[in-house]
Length: 482
Image (cartoon, rainbow, N blue to C red; front, side):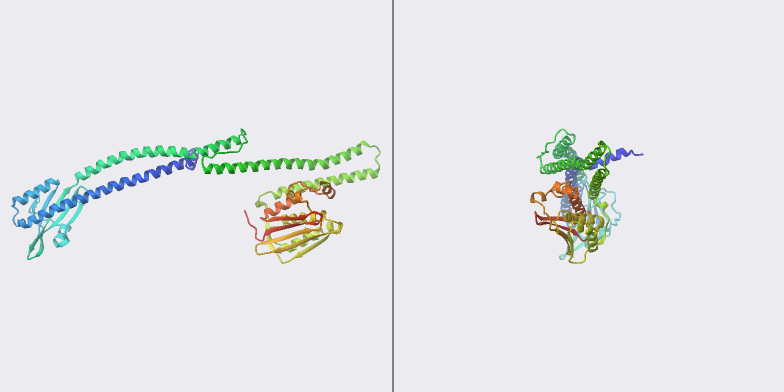
């Protein structure tokens, strides 16, 4: 049974960029060698056979003419012709057969088939005027068939054929020699390519090894300096991306520490107030009922404030989760805003603030109703809290073919220009003393922004101190999943 650990190691080896580069170089080097090997040797064999065939055909045609001149098919005793046939047979280490029109062999340089009948498709075709033909027999011999023609009154007729078998031993010996030399060259090329592949795979990845070592140095805490590996453009880009990531991580860590510090401070403040009030009661004897009731009311107020902070913190945690926590459905935005303003009506009435709702068109959109309601409620509630006496808060709903927008404007105290870029930070307050009076936790706008971003929307603010503030929320009509 195969060891699963071995399989995992093999799989990781294939995934290694170094091994992939090595294999690519090896394949890129070996493919041309294989192509050259088979191409050159194959071409050599074809050319050698063609040259040999043409050479023999020339001599055979000359002898074929002599056969006609000496009327050899009727009398094969001509010493001149027999000498030429023997010389041709010995020269090419082959065999010559002379066949007449009746397919009878009248001459065999091997002297073993004379007088016999030879029936062959190639010979019959040649006798019928098929011309010269040549073919390989068992890859060891070239067989050449040439017609023997007789001319009478300028008319040629075929009276026989001359069949010549030529040995290819010389060609095959040369081919085998070249093949052995080519094999040696291929082995040498393989060794050289292997060395180049090993060197190049290591050389190319050396900058990546450097950047890996540098990242490990940062990871292990030995250094916090920026990574700079400028050996190649790719490693430089990786280094820049890692440095940017580390910068963001440092900023997030600083933000986390600040957040923890702010949470601790915000949670400890009501507890400290309650402890002071409780200690004051315990330190006194025979506390009047009126004073006791006053202190208990203050303690209850601080408990409500603590509960509000914890509730907002839990809401903010939910808003920072992934889109998997989104409960998206088609919602009537007009009805949602009307119900929201109805719920906030009593709060606005106590502050003598007028709520105005203007709907420019009917809007249905894919949203998380709970999260969107919470986000928009925070904007309207802030408009009520930070408003002037007898002021107003106006909510305008509009839409186009892609987005719907909700504009929440008020006649309130406005936001200073230097504070606008910080209003979405957790626990940030423009006027801490005023916020304390109206019960703000500094988390409302952070919750709102997170909810809107989870809907793939945007929020813009326009404010002028002393004249009021306007928030414009823009959200896609169709939810865009990440």
